[in-house]
Amino acid sequence: MIEKTTDKQQTKEKPSTDIRIMDSSGCEGCPAHNRANLLKLGVDMEDWDFVVALAGNPNTGKSTVFNALTGLRQHTGNWPGKTVTRAEGGFEFGEARYKMVDLPGTYSLLATSLDEQVARNFILFGQPDVTVVVVDASRLERNLNLALQVMEITDRVVICLNLIDEAKRHGLEVDERRLARDLGVPVVPTSARYNQGLDELLNAIHEVAIGEVKPKPRRVKSHSPMLKAAVERLESQVLELYPNLPNSRWVALRLLDGDEDIIRSIRNGELGELITLDELSAEQRKELTPEVV
Ligand SMILES: Nc1nc2c(ncn2[C@@H]2O[C@H](COP(=O)(O)OP(=O)(O)OP(=O)(O)O)[C@@H](O)[C@H]2O)c(=O)[nH]1
Ligand SMILES: [Mg+2]
Image (cartoon, rainbow, N blue to C red; front, top):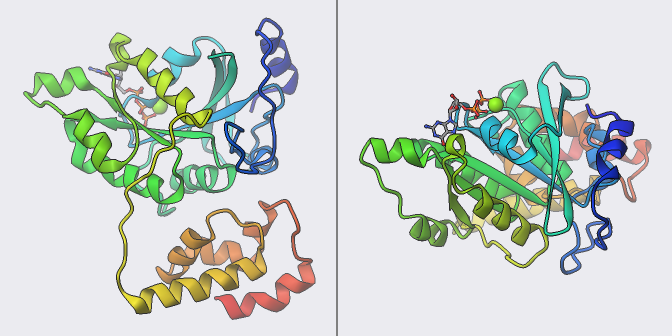
C-alpha cells in the first residue's frame, strides 16, 4: 500500500491542476470514482484526480504497460486483508494526476479465486474513473471474455490491444476500428514491450476520465420477460438493503446466478461495509437480509 507521506512527496513536483475531487455526482468531467470505498480498499486518493485500474488475463502485458506509464513512481504492497500483491503508481497527463492500480491477472470476474475477487471488488466498489482491459491481440477471442465482463460492470472502459507485434508475427491483423465499434468502447493497439501506442493509450484514458469520450459498451440484452421481472424484483430488494450500492443490477444478476461470494457478502454485511452514504442500520440490515437470499 502506498504510504500517504510518499504520495505527498510524489506530488510535490507535480504541476497544480484545477480539477477537483468530488463525489460521483455524475457531473460533466468530474471524477467518477468512489473515494470512500477506494480508501476502504486501501487506495488513498488524496492528491490524485483520477484512478485507473488495469485489468486483463494473466500474461497480457499489464505490468509492462503499468511500468511504462508510471516509471519509477510505483509501490507494491498487499490488498487489505489479503495475500494478493498490488502495485500502484502514478503519472500526469493533460494536467491531471492519475493513480494507476495494477489488478491481478484474471480470466473472469466471477470471483472463484481470491485474485478474481480482488479485481472484481475494485471495479465494482472502487468505481475507477477508467478501467483499462489489456488484451492479447494474438488471443483475442479468449481475452474478450474478461473485457465483456468488465463492460457489464462499468461504462468507463478502454481496451488496450497489446502484443500487436506478436499477433503480426503470427500473421494476424486486428481491425481495431471495427472492434471499437462492435464493443462500443475505445480500442488502442499497443506493443508495450516496444513502447508503441502508449501515447495513444494515455490519450484514450484521459478522454474517458474527463468525460470527453463516453463509451457505450455493448451489453448482452435479455428479452426474457421472466428474467427481466426477476432481476428487477431482486434489484429493488438489494437496493432496499443497501440504498447506495453501485451496480445493483449487476449484483442482482449475480444473485440469480447463485454467486456464492456475493450471497455471502450480502449475508455477512460485507457488501454494506463498502457503501458509505445513508446506510441502513445493522438492525435494519439483519431484518431484511433473509428476504433477499
Ligand atoms: N512481444 C511482446 N511482448 C510483450 C508485450 N507486452 C508485454 N510483453 C511481454 O509479455 C510478458 C508478460 O508481460 P507482463 O507485463 O508481465 O504481463 P502481465 O499481464 O503483467 O502478467 P501477470 O501479472 O502474470 O498477469 C513479458 O515477458 C513481457 O515482456 C508486447 O507488446 N509485445
Ligand atoms: Mg503483472
